[in-house]
Length: 227
Ligand code: DC
Image 1 (cartoon, protein in one colour):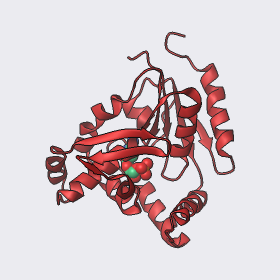
Image 2: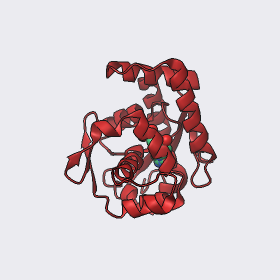
Image 3: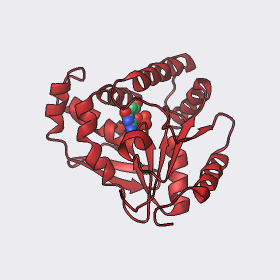
C-alpha cells in the first residue's frame, strides 16, 4: 500500500471524467492519469504494426515493441509512440473503439498495469478510466463513479467534435456510445462497474464546478493515508 493519495474517477465514455479529473488535479496540484490514453496508445500501436485486433496473441505480440511516452499538458496529455507524436490520432472515435476492443483482453490489461501504477507520485494522483478504483488502485483514498445519461453524453461528445470541425449525427453518436458501453460493461476482465465503496455522481444536470465541489467535499471527509 502506498502512502501517496489517489482519487479514482471511473465511468462510461463521455461522462466528463477527463474534464473533471483535470480540473480536480489542477486544484489539488496532483498528477493525472488518463488511462484511456494508455489503451488508445496500445490500440494505435497494434494497428500500426498490422495486428489483428480480434486476436489476443497478435495484439500482445505487437505490444512487445511499444515505446509509449505520456507527457502532461494543459489540454490533457501529449502522447508519443517512439518518435511520433500521436496525440491527435489518439483522440479519434475510431481509436476509442479500437481501444475498447483491445481492452477486453486480459493479457493486454495486465501488460499496462505497471505503466498505470507508475503515475502514482507525490503529492498525489487523480486517475480516470473504467477500472481505476476496482483493479488498478483498489486502495484509493477516494473512489468516484461518474455517470450521465446516454443522451447527455452524446450531446457533449457532439459539441466537442463540432469544436474540432467534425460533424457527426446524434443517431450515429448514440449508437457508438451504446456499443462502447455494452462492450466495456459486459467484458469478462475488469468490466466497467462502480467499486462497492465508490461515491456515485450523476453529472447529467451538474456543471463541472458542481461535480468538482462534490468530490472535494467527499475528499475532506475521506481517510487520507497518514492523516
Ligand atoms: O476513456 P477513453 O474513451 O479514452 O477509453 C477508451 C477505451 O479504453 C474505452 O472504451 C475502454 C478502454 N479503457 C479501459 O478498458 N479501461 C480503462 N481504465 C480506460 C479505458
